Image (cartoon, rainbow, N blue to C red; front, side, top):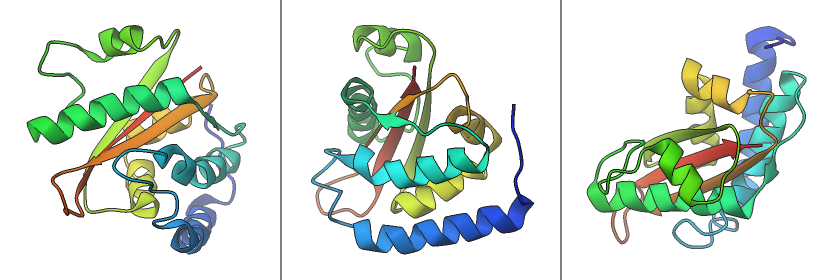
Length: 161
């Protein structure tokens, strides 16, 4: 159920506006590795979803903990993947974190701030589909730095009901 409003030009304008907003948010909402990253994602996800006629997503502490857990695992292992070294796939991790019902996860790695991160995910069919899934009403966003002092981060976005 994807609805296009204004096409590529509108998307480019909206994402450009978000980049300006991000300049005001950079640093202030990134309170340490992984902590509070969901607040940095609110404006991006609201703009993205409203463009497609979908209600906004609300930040959720349970989903953020699940996202932080995965971001931390990826940073420790140096691998970007949805499974963990202790044999937990996505469904098992969600169950262990108390996430009930449908859920999805987007992951990323690199030296990027939220504006670039969400733009990248919107330009990827699977990631875009997750963010535009009408079943979801909540999200958690987290990151962990690749190493101390590094500008590269492992990002995880968990979406759920």
